[in-house]
Length: 456
Ligand code: NAD
Image (cartoon, rainbow, N blue to C red; front, side):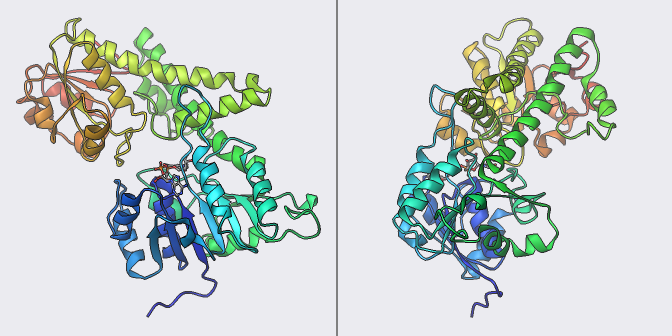
């Protein structure tokens, strides 16, 4: 017998990828009755059977617990969302092909089909990362079709690899709500739905935890997300620009980062020089932000983000160059082991992965590349069929002329350099993430090279 806590709501979560699947199971964990609507039938079926279609630490347990509670279900059909008090929009907003702008076709299609089942008194809540102005436009569509419904924007800040923790214990909640001075979406009197009160009910335990909450207008809420990602990308590119300079001067970027990071105003987090950022968020989000600024006639405000993007992409080129240099100035026929394929550790996400970008460039320059990763290989085999994948670092490194660490998985940081050295042809390691214990590797007879470090 299911005992729902007081205040439990019926909730739908539309789009069950990295964000939506975790959100759906987390909302059930908070005691709500949740249906996840996912158009990809295979994904919906896997989730309903308690199988996670991607790698995310701790998520499988959460999913299975929520399913077992009877509070969570999945469906490929939008009609399953009918009657929910709150509908979360969690579909993808990738970069448009050949452009910087965000592709909003999924958001638009999901909204259009949601409007067919949306009822009065219900709240649509956008979580996807969208260009500023999107929420206001969607709110008009809602108001036209169901004047007694409302829309809010509630951006999501979860990090892949920490998605469960970040969803249940976020640093802050941001609610973008209709401007009540304008009389709400209905046009007169009080707004048809009290979005803030309803979201407080959804997130009751999180609100009770005294999580900081910002209630604001749509535009600010949308911008909080893109501004936060732009800041993080800038911080990474800042330290990578310092790494370029360190390479030119013989200074050491790791010590530099430690030293400046001791200043609270700067902070040490996100100051790890290396191969730079990738993934399904930072690159496309800063590009979409620049594109949107251009549309709004404010492109000058964000020209610095183009440089942030440039610095980031240059690291990949530099890594390939460094590999060529250590391989006696030619990659032709050289055997290279690539450790890591995911865009970051603790994830199987390979969207815009710096590691795969480098692996592909090495291969195009004639190297014989073998890629390994603890979690991402199924995705690599599906999407990068031209790359040779092997299951273990030892297989990747067998007979290698050089080993490249490109994603800093714990198991690679813990490799024993002496034992690992016995499988390679030449003990050369390139640390693309400044993650290895340089002294230990050098002591085991390896030539160690890294980005932004003294390479002598
Ligand atoms: P994703 O591609 O993994 O998931 C999107 C899902 O939506 C897919 O499973 C897709 O099949 C489904 N979908 C598409 N159209 C649909 C429709 N009409 N009805 C139902 N389902 C539909 O993407 P993601 O990484 O989960 O990102 C989703 C959004 O969240 C993006 O805007 C992203 O920028 C944002 N975001 C992502 C993260 C993250 O770490 N992944 C963090 C914060 C914000």
